[in-house]
Image 1 (spheres, rainbow, N blue to C red):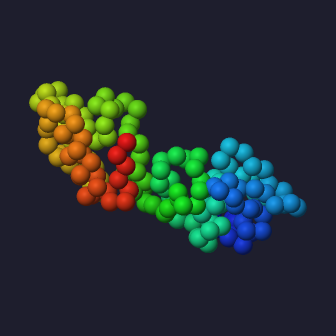
Image 2: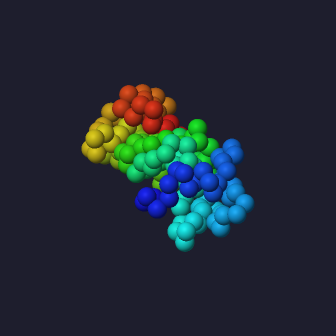
Length: 151
């Protein structure tokens, strides 16, 4: 969101209650599915909420619990692209059922692999899927910190 909208304006136009935006009387805004239209421009609700509470807008805002519909201010935090991807859910084409674990056809084992500093790093090959998951969880905790998502 560009400086088209200020914290002062958002506080005048909207009321925030438990993760939801409500338009105050006398302002022309339209609220839709996770978006609001103000001054002819469309804004994501979570960005308006973050601006209302913090007075600035980071480039990206991460939903801590991964639920893009949960716009409670306690669920929103600034993030960079890497951190946002570290907090992503497992891919829908995942066959292991666990994040960062793939079947390696050549070794016929489960491989644990994370992307760190934009490079894929292997954390070994395992016969046991549950052991591989424990290794993956430890690696995520160590390298992703607060942005580690395990499901």
